[in-house]
Image: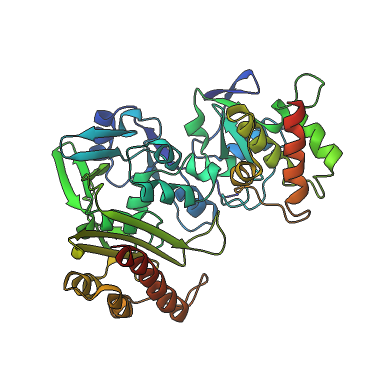
Length: 151
Length: 277
């Protein structure tokens, strides 16, 4: 059994130690907000936070999260209130097909937690590991900038 | 999904890691997983045994020693970016490894032992004359970067050994240079990657290190170019780049492109360094 915390809940999971974290999240815990894009660490769709740090959950074997604190996109909103980043993605039209969106939101949340007032350049660099194939990046960057004003 | 049913041993301390290595020399070593997990998912490798070093915190971190700087093998690229007494070129390199998600997991030691000819940091270790500290239950020894990569993705570590650290000498007076050519700024695997270092005294190049990645089966130094620089040929030394490299056509680029670009990035670096003095 591997014990860790997901979105504030302590859990024990029975999985082979090399099982990918994304598979534990989606298949066992039914937290399907985290998406699999490429499955090889290129696209960032599966980004989650481990101890506050953004990582690709497709590259993490579950054995490496023992005792760690994980936040998925389901843990970004506070109770029933959307996070300002989520609200801004809606208002700025920053999502199209939606597969990349959870990863962008989680990565952007990690950025604003450590740097509450990033420049556009810093936002672009922080989000460089998240790929979007629909919208282009302008509206996504705009949404993060808009979220700064209310965050 | 290719879930591996491998048995995993997790080490919490260096002593435990070396003991487990001695007991399981056939286990595959897992650090941040940014290469290994990709190989597993692609079905490219099947693992029976894994030695998990992640969480072995004494193997992470950068410290100043009597002879220079010691970088623990499990130091991540995100960590490297934050350490101010490292050469700027090394921190620049760290910023080009994948993007934030990869930099938070990918380690210095993983890049070195994985030993891809395209490994972003590898030419820099050659340019720095770095020494790799390796350990087993039998003791500690050092292997120079120059002697480490023995062939395509093979290295000089014995089965019972682990890479524990990288040592670099303080050479703040030298100009260290890093240049990566890829398809885009982030998340690109290099088409050509350059690490270079020049010591210039009284307007003379007294020591030259020129190393390239993605242009041969291993990252390598360019002896003809280095000798030309040390014999005073200046920027003209760049014309010998193609004599020292054996690039191939692959999915990322062509031999022709790599020969051309390798020559140009060496020349433009030399122009900047040598025209300044």
